[in-house]
Image (cartoon, rainbow, N blue to C red; front, side, top):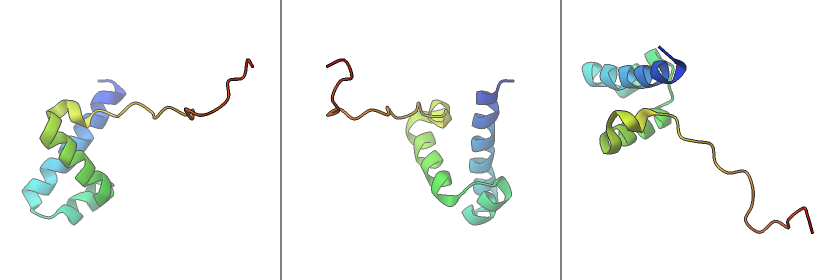
Length: 71
C-alpha cells in the first residue's frame, strides 16, 4: 500500500464515519480533519468518485505577466 492509497482510504473512512454517525463534526474530530476539508472531499467524491479523493497537483508557481530571465 503506497502513500496515495493510504490518503484516499483515510479520506473515504472519514466520509463513511460521518455517514454512520450522522454527525460531521464528530467524524471530523475523530478523523483529525477540518470541516472545510471534509466538505471539499465530500463534494469531490460526489462528483468524481474515488478518483476525486486523490491529491490535486500543485498550483503553478509562476505569474503569466513576469518578464523572462533571458532578455
